[in-house]
Every structure is written in C-alpha cells, then in structure tokens.
View (cartoon, rainbow, N blue to C red):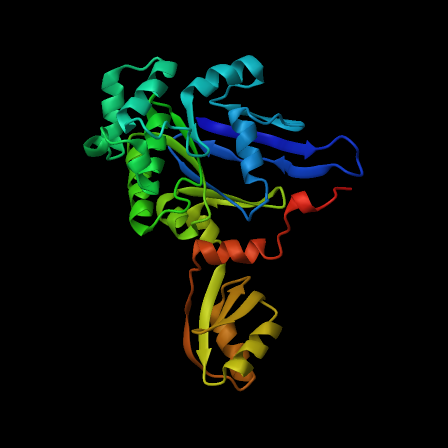
Length: 312
C-alpha cells in the first residue's frame, strides 16, 4: 500500500493570469510504505511547496493527493495523525533541558514519559537529556527535532533538509537515525541537497525541476537507466569529436578520466568499429555508472527558480 500518492498536484500563487506564478505544475508520484524516498530539486523548484501541501500548511490550487489512501478534508485530517514532520528546527526553549522540551511536546501530543525516553535513546541524546538546549550543537538540535517528531510514533516521517548545515559527523548521525527508522518499517520522505547522502540512504527518488517531476523511480534505476560508457584514447580531442557525431550517442561529455557517452543501444562492438573507422583506437572501454549527483546535474542544468518567472 502507498503512503503518499499525488495526482497532478498543482500550486499557483496569485489570481491574475498574467501575474500568477506556477510553483508546482501537475506533480504526480507515489511513495510506497516502507520506502526511504528522496525528493530532490534545485532551489525554487517546488520541493518545499509540495511538502507544504502534503502536511496541510499550503492549499493546492489543482489536482490532489491522498495519504494512506485517504483523501478529502476529513480523510486527510485523520491520516495526518499517522504522519510526523520536521520542516525546520522547532522552537525549543533554550534554557530548558532537552528532556523538558520533549515533555512539553509530549504533553501536546498526549504521550507519556516512557515514550520520551525511547525517543531520546533513538536519537542518541539520553546522556545529554538533562543539558540545556542552548548548549546543544546544531547536530544535537536536529536530533532533538527528530525525537520530537517521533514522539507520536508516526508511520510516515517527512523531513525537509534534515542534515542541512551539519558537519560530517552530524550528517552521519542523521543518516544512521534514518536507517534505524527505516529498519523499523517507517516510511521516510525527505528533501535534501546532499545528493551523496541521498544515494546512500534512499531506496527511491523523484527529481523536480521548475515545478515538474522530470524523473522518478528506484535509485538504481535512476542512476543506471541508460547504457553509459567510459572511453579513453591517446587523442582525447579526436575521441570527443568522433563521439559527439556518433549517431547512437544520446549525450557525451569529457572528464578527467576520458569521455563518457550515453548510448541508445549499448552496442559496444559498434562503438569500437565506428571509432576504428575514424582512425581512433581505444585504450579503455568500460560500462560507466554515474552518481546520483551527476544525473541530478545533467537533468536539472539550466533550471530556473519559478518564483522569478511570470507564468503565462
């Protein structure tokens, strides 16, 4: 069963056609229960607006969505009781301890003390639970925010840039918490700019550009959806020129390693024959698997912040 499903979800700001801004444009995707789903895109691509619609802080102007199969005002209200979200660091009281801050949040959610201690243990803050929030590092503050999100034991957890601004140790701590939650069967929907972390952590991704989904699927499918090869020859300039004209190459770029080309058919023997016919003999030819970061840059290159454009 899915945890999130959107149907042509749309958000337009403004009412006058010539001055309105289309921030999210007919977005459709599915997040199945148990997935760790990365929602990626350049700044201003529509990520935060989409998340706002899912959690109920922004009203859609078109399309719709359901959570756990529930839709409509009443259905979504009930479904959101099964959702926890960390959109930014909550307004914790700086002179109160981490534990006391969680007690306040737990009181609002009707959660008892045992659950507070479980959440502190989950995020690795039990030893610092008595310390004032103002003494916490940024990573500890982020972990306390996750603990607050987990108090009601939600089935779906929505995280907007959970590791933003953290040092490598803090990023690793957040990654381990996400993996622990996933191992416990939680569905994670996260937005992040840390693409290497997304590739290590997420099972599925969707990439949004200028308000539209441009690709989605399992991470392995998104980064390995084509037949890319890495080629090397003595004359890299001649190799690049030849591959640029090769009919079966859908794209080509030079790197410090040589030339990387995406092939329509994946026929390596034809590549070798083609290059030999142009007097180019390869010293290296091997399949190439791009990183998620490379795929992201390729398909979002030239993306424009939709909030700077006037929609027609």
